[in-house]
Length: 231
Image 1 (cartoon, one colour):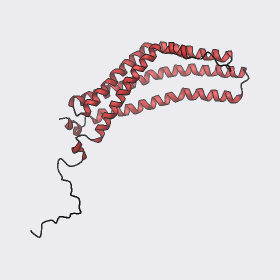
Image 2 (cartoon, helix red, strand yellow):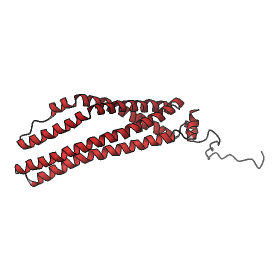
Image 3 (spheres, helix red, strand yellow):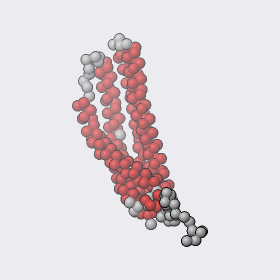
Image 4 (tube, helix red, strand yellow):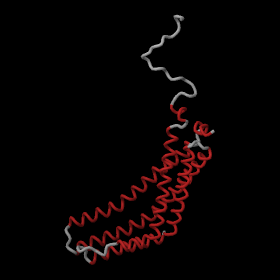
């Protein structure tokens, strides 16, 4: 044996070979960001389909269910409070009827966008070139849907806020006429304010996060090193 030949060390782990098959990305065939994007789109698509089905059922049967489940007034509620509550429900239902057709159209739009995300994500996860193109189209459609829904929801929220502000004044007046404690009036005031503002913050926050995911997908799936994986 030559003196220049390397010595084998039985206590040393063998080094991994270098070349086209070295590394985790080549072994798995998919970068981690690609897998994460596909899984997120699949989850958003599945949740979107469920939301579209339940939302359609709620729009069609909402007023009837609301009438069945609405309380007729508790033992501690005065006639003024019951009337203020009923007026608020009537105004909210009038706003829903005003945007009924548009809401159904958005639900249909959601169904299409969610279906594309689910199917495109599954195909893209399998490194199908058709799936990659389909997921790009799904991200574009979903981004347009999120933008459209945000605009429509903003219009509805503004009208709901006007109705709830008016109702809050009537509630406070009814509580004052009924000699309710000042602490109860303050709790009622802040409870209604939180119930008005919190859903808006959550809705805009979710729309911002999902819009970021779709923008990332539109850019990431078109990169050259990603396109090569599908060939």
